[in-house]
Length: 119
Image (cartoon, rainbow, N blue to C red; front, side, top):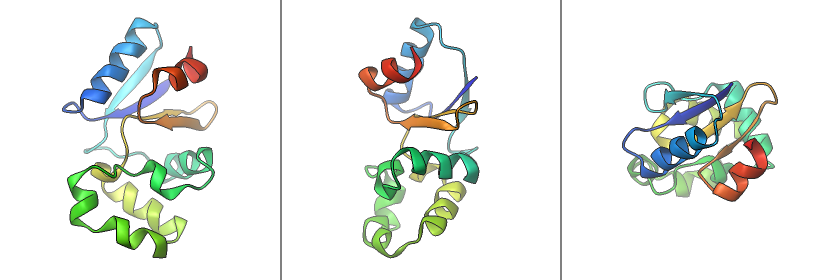
């Protein structure tokens, strides 16, 4: 079953949940702030995006800006990025959808991408 890490106040997350329901796709919704994805899931997602560290960050979020992640990112190792994301769900782009069966997933919501991946 898909794991959907989401934030209830996020319009994109609500849109994604609606799309999943309309398409009859079973999923478990997990509050991303309280329960961020595991380090294993984050590593797998990073691999899905060919190691593009910025792709899995919520770059429009307040924590990203307040912590100055944009300036720090070039000097961080992938392991440091994983540790940072695993400790602060606000930093992760959402929704963060992970399929434990294939150890792959998507971040953000694009109906076209989601149709290709899940429908």
